[in-house]
Amino acid sequence: MLLRRKACAALIFAILFLMLASQSIQRRHFLPLSLTLPVIAVMPTSRERSCGCVESCLSDLGGSNWFQQRYDPQQQPVLRSTNNLMDPTELRWWLVHLQRSGNNRTLEEVMAEMFKVIPSPTVDFRPLPSLCHTCAVVGNSGRLRQSGNGKLIDSHHSVLRMNKAVTRGFEKDVGNRTTHHFVYPESAVDVGGGVSLVLLPFKLRDIEWLTSALSTGKVKMTYMRVKDRVAADKNKVLVVNPAFFKYVHDHWTEHHGRYPSTGMLAIIFALHICDQVSVFGYGADQQGNWHHYWEDNRYGGAFRKTGVHSAEFETHIIHQLAREGKISLHL
Image (cartoon, rainbow, N blue to C red):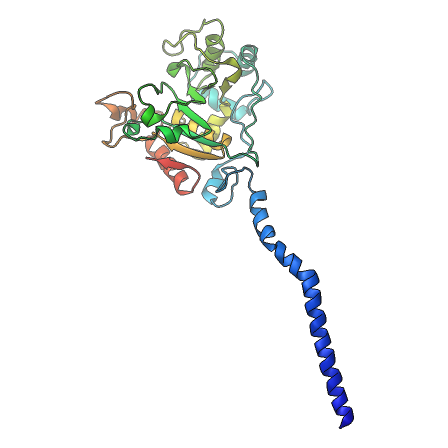
């Protein structure tokens, strides 16, 4: 009996010893680790993001299979040098399928002349973990009237406008800041200091025009009379890569229309240079008219069907981008 009691006491002592030792080990080794768990749980989220935005970064492809199937992060949206030439298939499509120029010069020759007048861009569009680069893409729709979006538009880091956009007199609705102004020869306007003129070259002649408009002024005609000179900061001029047209046509507008519109190209361009994108002034106004916010046009519906763009399909894509959380759409 005495031996049995001693054995039980020894067993109880051993159990108590093991429990105390276990608690000591847990306090010394596991408790500090548990205190670091909140940091471990949070840090990967910030490391995984390519930019400094709190909510999301456009270049992070997760969360939308639809977007991931269309967005190509390897796309180069601007021409940088004569070494930045196109794939032969893309070049053929751009030269033949868009707006033929009617001359026998090569892209290499025309680009070489252009880069004698403007420097090859050095701007880096890659996202930075320390920055959340927000962009407002401002269309020219009459729906901007009475919108009161001016301050919101101007609050973005970059403000992208296009063609003959007017701000004076409409600041309350459209803002007054511009950082990038998209044009082609037939829609060209002078741009102010500090603004990047962004050429959309729908044809080889457009690049020839840019070189001339910033130097000699010899090119006065494309398929119509155009501005022979344009005021712009040569160091800030950007030329959209012709291959980018093909990319947007294949991946985004999916061959609806002969080629994408200026407005569509500007939005997809923004997806490649910005971390977050807000879109303003696209589509018909509240009365269903398609016209520019600075004009009154009884026949604004003519803008809906140009014969080369598909307004309906492009509108569908823009709304889908908003549904996927990739743009903020202000109607």
